[in-house]
Length: 254
Ligand code: PDD
Image 1 (cartoon, rainbow, N blue to C red):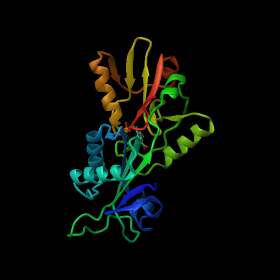
Image 2: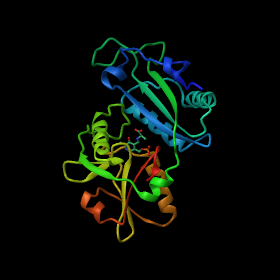
Image 3: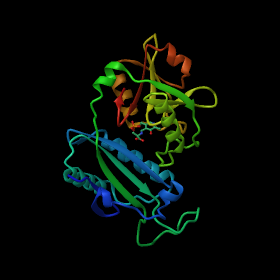
Image 4: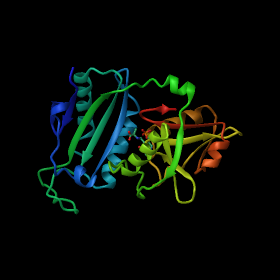
């Protein structure tokens, strides 16, 4: 069965889905996105992802293409049409199509011109073997801009980091800031558990993306009475740790 995507108001077969060559997402990476897991036909942490998408749009003055309620209906419809109980939902909003000019296009009084694409892709959300065996991580300098709290589609540093990991046979790259502290993974948050049973993950400032999975894990850890420290840690501390792991919508905890 062919996969169906949602592109600017239409449900279309994925192979026919396309956007305009002057979409500002394509030319300037002027857009934001979310990845939400669908497990057994249920969205995981949906509210957290919608809240962050709206925050990202707001930080960049991108008009929401529709209301959250309407977007939830589109996603329901897409999930139904794609018939994939376990999947990753990709939502991308850009500032839309305009002749190439760095500054924002003039606002249209008729409403939002933002472009919206949503895709559903089958995903193996069972990581039990990797959980058992563990995964490898490399470190790499963090080359990104200073607004990492915005989930922008400008992902070139993360592309390079993940490629470095792949070439080293590793699963993820942990990016290291100029002071020698780990910021996060190229597409995940980074955690360690110290020998004295403290759970450490970097504090959520503009230096990292505040993962929705991270927020849930912190809540679970707190409920379990685990001591939590939200602070930066070094690769050396990670080597000394009893456990080190990543979290994201795609891996959960690994
Ligand atoms: N990435 N940090 C970065 C840089 C990320 O790109 C992601 C997620 C996370 C984890 O956030 P969350 O728990 O909300 O998924 C942290 C997604 C999965 C991606 O780009 O594919």
